[in-house]
Length: 108
Image 1 (cartoon, one colour):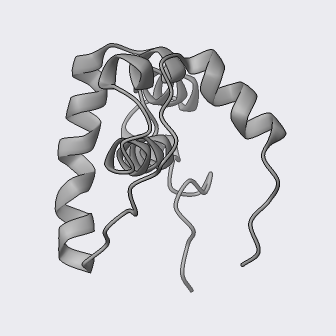
Image 2 (cartoon, helix red, strand yellow; image 1 turned 180 degrees about the horizontal axis):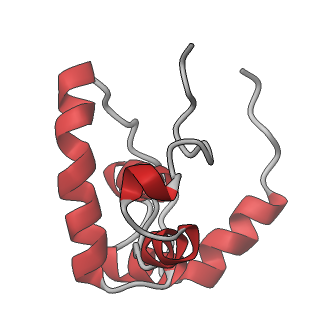
């Protein structure tokens, strides 16, 4: 039986050596969750905005965004993933949020 990542079974204190509360507190300290690291890297590769604007969007520092990208880029390269550059460019996180709120969904 495969146990899904994030399952309470895998965070059992007997496995982690710490209480669930302490484990979750540690987990909450991660600046950028992995799914957001991927998103930040895609947005950066699309050249939608500067690292400064990405940092503003995610509420972290530019260095944190850069580190997140260093974590993800090898996976992109391994899979041959290349994001298509965008014609749109944003100067602020507010511009990105406004655009995303008004943009129609793309067909799959």
